[in-house]
Length: 473
Image (cartoon, rainbow, N blue to C red):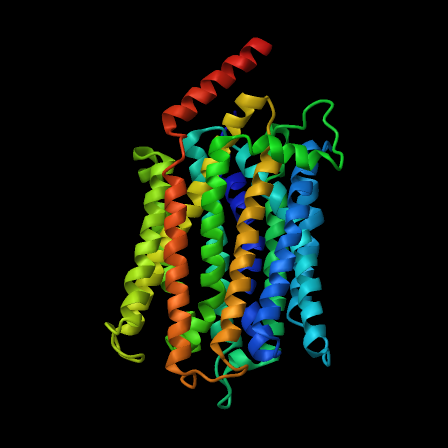
């Protein structure tokens, strides 16, 4: 297969940004905005996000199967990129602009409706986008390079948008904390819409030259509404796929809890200012760049399952030492000159490990697809990435729901100022975060150690596929 051009690789990678724009909004601001600014209960905010994510159980496999069977002059991926990407960008405007006077249940309905629509159109974009990434190359190492570029661009958007928000939109003004001002979030929604729309167009235009080289739908394959269930049954027969989904489930739940509580921990537990929170862009950037630099070298020396197991173990240890040290009283009090640099170092290591885990997982799924093709004779990129996407999103949604319940149980009042929350409340937040993330990271570690798809295994699969294609020709 013809190797990817630099333009195709990087414009494809930029196409990961719309998904990261969504993550940046939901991870950093949505729960905080609806609970602390709009007064919605944490349980209802978490429930709305969980229901929206559960809807993906329906939409993800449908879009995956539809995309796999689609036949157009522009291929089976690009038409859906346009159909999903543009409405997704526009819905970011509605996310941070609920009408006035809704009341709590009206606010819940608005958050639920906008989240369902946004995620539906994002699915229409992101599932074909992810499937295309597995089709751009068949090389074991180049797939890691593509995945690495894609994850790097996603993290670039994910770190720049919150940094801009904390620096430009949310600084304290006239003694009022900018994080508690509703109008500031509308400005952030406009920025999100512009970034999501622009990067969608860059991806579509920049990768159109690859369309003739991408696999087409099999002859006679026509989408029907019973097809997604059959496709899922077929893909879940693959042992390595089931194992990777177990790891994705554990890691997704872990991420959902941590990211939903992230702004609460930064604001109330560590009592960081908006300027300090904006400063997290530095370790985030360094961790992302370091992952980009070392992954190729490590990938040539170690198999992907081995690296994934090591990374998940590292994530557990990184959370355990820092947050655990604070909870046991081994760290100085908030405001001490050492606390912020230590947090920056902890964030940098966490980002290095998370970026590595995400890139390696995407690359591994492409290898599993080759194994699946050898066993079944079918390419199921759309279905596989739909299943993986749903498992990740659903478990993240469950984590958000749990985090919302904890926010209510902990008793943090809407509009509470940093420093005004009791130590008992902060301790409960800290322990919940620590125990949940550590346990779930170790569950992911267990599943990664059960994977059996080394470089030698993949080379054997590719050799057998080449033999099949040669004999059929």
